[in-house]
Image (cartoon, rainbow, N blue to C red; front, side, top):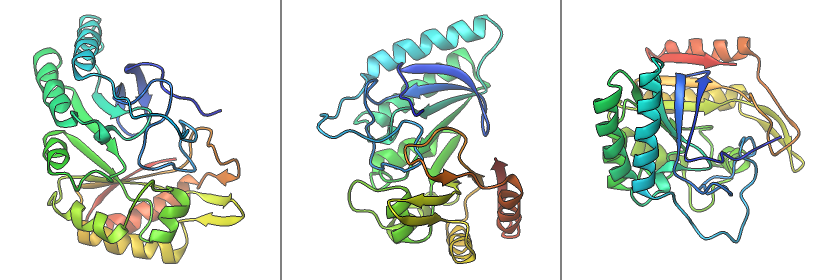
Length: 256
C-alpha cells in the first residue's frame, strides 16, 4: 500500500543506498506535490485540485535542528540528512535558503553527516536550484531512460520534459552529481514497461558517458507501487548493468 510522509522531519530510516537517513519533507503532509507522477512512486498518485503548499522554511529549520540535537545527544547522529518526502523537494520556492540552513545546522550539530537531495531533475534549469545542489554532498538526480517516450510512460512528467534538455543541464554540474535510475518491467495501461532492454540500456549508458557523473545508483522496486502490474528486476541483472557502467570508469552502486 502506497503512503505519504505525515511529518516534515521523518525517520531516521535505514536507507538501502545512503545509510542511517533522517528525512526532510518540504512538500504537503496530506498530498503529493511533484513535477512527475511516476507509476512506481511509493507516495501513490498525485491528486488534482490541490493548491501548492510548502512547509515554511522557519518550521523546517526549527524541527530539523531539534531532531539533530536529539539524535546527537543519544549518540546516534544520522549518516545523512535526505531531502525527499511527498514529491519534488526542489520545487520549494526557498529551496536554496533551506539548504543554507541545513548546512549551518549540520556543521554546528553533527558535522559528520552528509546532506543528500533526491531529485527528479526537472528544476535544474533554475540557477538557484543548481547553486543549492552544488553545495550538498550528494546531488542525486533521476534519469530513468534515454528516451522521451519511456520517460512519459514511467515517470509521467507534469509539463514539458525532454531527456536531451535534461542531459544538457546535468552537464552543467561538471560531474558533481549522482545519477539515479529505477529499473523495472511489467505493464501499465495496456503498454509494456521495460527499461532493461538492450536498446534502453545502451542508449542510457551513452548518456552517462556524456554526463560523466561521479557516481551512478541503480535500483528497483522495493515498496508498493500505484500501478499494480510492475515487477522487480533481479539483483543479478542490476549488477550486470552496473558492470557496464563501471566499464565507463564510473562508480556504480546496486540496490535490489
